[in-house]
Length: 95
Image 1 (cartoon, rainbow, N blue to C red):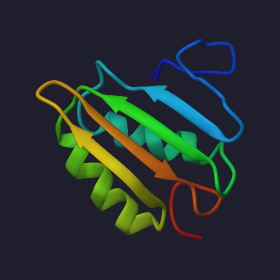
Image 2 (cartoon, one colour):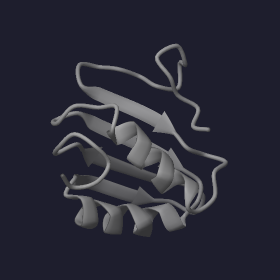
Image 3 (cartoon, one colour):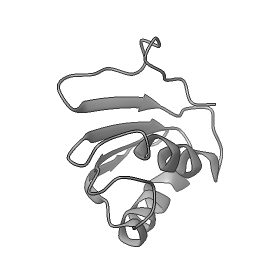
Image 4 (cartoon, rainbow, N blue to C red):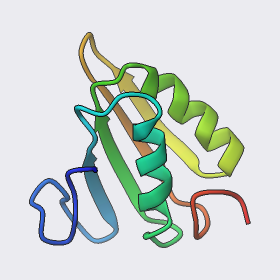
């Protein structure tokens, strides 16, 4: 399970910006959880996702192309991947 909920301090809300901590999850779970949380958000919301599964950096690019959500930015360090995704429509996949 991702470490985020409305009561969890790892999800930070500033207007329509949300941060999710998916560290500790291995492929394919970060993408599975991203699909789930996108379904809970509104078009225009911006999600920052942190994961230590380095495959996530590649996976999130493909996922955004497939689903129609906007990949604003992706950054990879030796041990961390941070992706910023703008929700373009309701739901994890294209309508």
